[in-house]
Length: 383
Image (cartoon, rainbow, N blue to C red; front, side):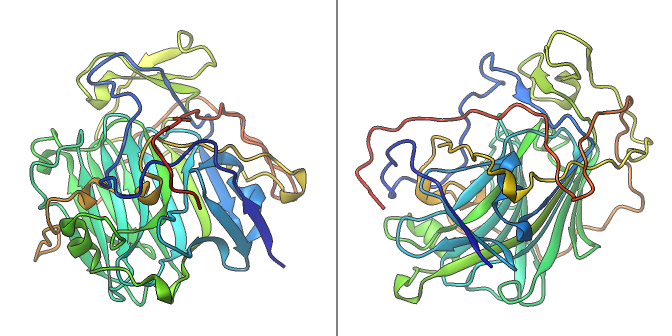
């Protein structure tokens, strides 16, 4: 049985020829910005094989249409200009995200799972539809694209035909990229330009696919994506079965206390009011993982929960693109693998957080929705 969810566009889309890049509505290292809504629970488990209820903790980009079946949420590109994308309605501040998925096939088609912050810190998984043997790992700090030497590709068995579980374990002192339980890459804080390029501020999760080889894309982007996309071979579908998120610092919101962009400047607000029960971060590299494992399940699909439609201000045709997809040439592939860390050193948190669970596996997540609706008046592209 399939259920279908079509999200009506809330604004006109900007022309699809716009250069693909990540986007922020307010950069807190340049000016004062609103607090980021947090995940006020230790964890979240969204099972997309149960239908549209699993998307209740996410918002969809304009013109996004998702179909649900036994393989979970289907992100389908059927024609030029489409880029189905969702993003979490909350931020996490250090944690672990795990996505069980199957990448979309097709030359020039890019499937993405991206963690991104307001100041353009970024941690990426990216799959190229014309490459059936590898997955790209990448990261950026403060949107720094002065060099493109951070991407490393790792072997994975037929990512367009087989489901795999891809995870990112992110702490203040290291990041691990994990495939099916095996760590393939570890980045230490000091190895990212002495921490200057280390992702370290609260992030949202973005998932979707787009045509890096589509008409109007810069030559560098087309080359990186593997070539021009032949839409006569559409549809190109990415499947997501399950998303699990562990938040090492549950909070109602997160505040930037200065413009440094350093994790030490982030205030963790554990009350609905950002001025109450809040404190700046303190942690040690020798701390251990959280001891609580309570989860927040998705809403039951029978509740008919409304799904917010948001436009993040980017070109709708490329709104899951990472910084690596900018038009400055192909990403550089490292020839050696970064050694994995010998021990997990996740930060701890204190205080129990309220969660909602039910015997049916359905619950409601008590967080405020992230409102990022940007109305763009230049578009005349109509799906």
